[in-house]
Image 1 (cartoon, one colour):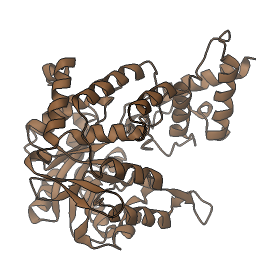
Image 2 (spheres, rainbow, N blue to C red):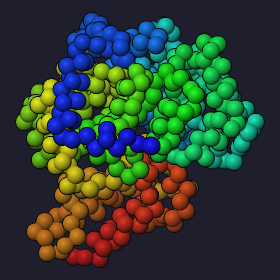
Image 3 (cartoon, rainbow, N blue to C red):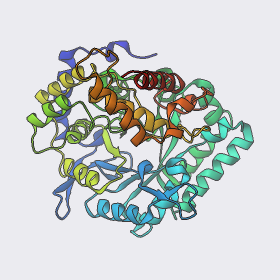
Length: 459
């Protein structure tokens, strides 16, 4: 069960922990290892953490490959990865010290591993770390069980190595564990998957075996305490909002990080920006952050926060654009850890953000494609944007009602094609089990559509 005493840490203890983390990061690296910079031209010195289990020197900034740039396919039937841009991004990242690349078979409409493998194959294999995942939840939800599920899972694993042009994987994860025990046992234990991949680790074809977590804290505790697996690393969602204010069914990062740290398990961070929500915030919160650090981006606060904790091995960011890559590299070249006062500043900032009830969509696109063509992330992100800009106004007597009404409706049509808007949702619920944030997507579509229809009827 969840450690309630730890989870309900007081403000004083939080600041004490934050201060200790800020001090410790300057003295030690991940899980008892060391931290060191490496000179790279034009970008300062990238900070590295040493994995105490393998000796790997891993860049504190890891490249999350789930958001590679896409472009229309040559046959006009959907989008494909923009390979030329991907290679330019990978080359720049490696040139500036980034050496950890995180992929999965299901990312980028299934193109992620092939695209990332092509880009990385142009660089010496021993100079970067490949992380990818067993995304066998797709097979499990399609009804595969037992030996059929094991065979499909093994096939996915070998296909990953083929696409990455390698005969070993540096970091391999059981993808998105935590929704419930039936899912965990069915996907990993009952069918022999765990046993098979433990043998692959023993044979050296998997150098580090871990899992990415979303969901039930009891599943998390079971995996750490009772599964019988000695995990080499664990990937969790952690940022300065989720530390104490995780939404929906998500578990507070305070608890997740604490359980891993006390077991000396290296931590890989995903969603340091909450799917971009920590770089797209209400204007007065942006102004607050910029006033404190005028020369730094708003996003840099989130990256410095995640990197300050000493058990963190690497912080993943899905960087679609070169300017995002350059900014994030600057945040870790080198890392300037947060001090106690800066932790307190962020903690107070989060309290202010709670007044803006955005939907916890991280734009991961796990819910896509919708069988009815709805652009689910597009709808949710437009709504969140209007929340942050103060354009969700229901009272027609409000001074800014007409302006807010126009901003919502015009922006909605510009960002989401009419045939892909929320009014086409029939509540089939196929998306619900796919959302790692446990969003009740049909309910949100109904709410947003009702709001949009009410605005259309008003004057």
